[in-house]
Length: 301
Image 1: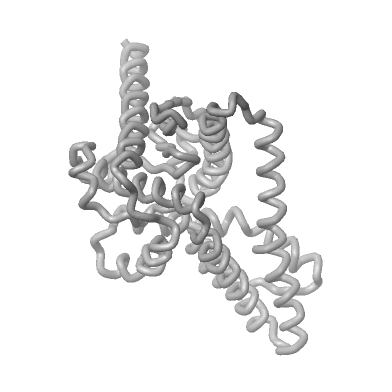
Image 2 (image 1 turned 90 degrees about the vertical axis):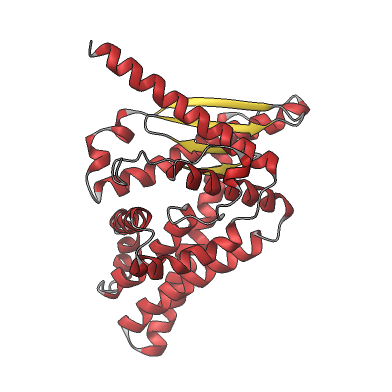
């Protein structure tokens, strides 16, 4: 089977667990407070698996929407599993509220601060080009500073360990290795198709894109940063997808080096229990895909 035909699996870390996105389902495995494992499968809708998902650029926009919606579903599930020991349950409304607050803070920190800071610099430097470059650099520095800050938090460190376990397990799956701890241990915690890598590429692509966008009037300065987000995300997704498919190419390795280096902050070496959770999530996703394929073949007669 060629690299282009090999099914692509990816995922993300959640609270004491891992989510794996398969071909037609997502699967989440989480460690309960008592040490047992909780799992969940959820089928993907046709918008995430249909023909549009295979069209360059358009698939990047769909992938961005998918990451937000499925990520929230997986995070909500893991949060409720973690809350089982207290006999509590986090409602969808509460989770949506927390996500709204987080999104508002993200917009303020990574969008408004760079825009207003660069607007001041434009007056000082008398150059739209330099102001646009400064805006991108400020946004990138804020992003790196944020990653560095949260990486020092104990709870986040555990999430980053699961993040590493997810990447190592995906590496093993891509190379056809047995999904066993001793085989997975040899792989790195960084992966070219990481969400962190995607965000870094978005920052760089945005700097390049906004060089060619005017800053006047002020309403255009604000709206252009919003309107162009889907296009920037679409291009960034293609870069990540290409780098993942051609990981051995020297030029591609040069391009992905900064992203892989950044993952030294967002991933940690996991313990065996965490790798076992990542394995369980991968196995659940693969099993769900197998059932979906069998059902489709049955339906076709």
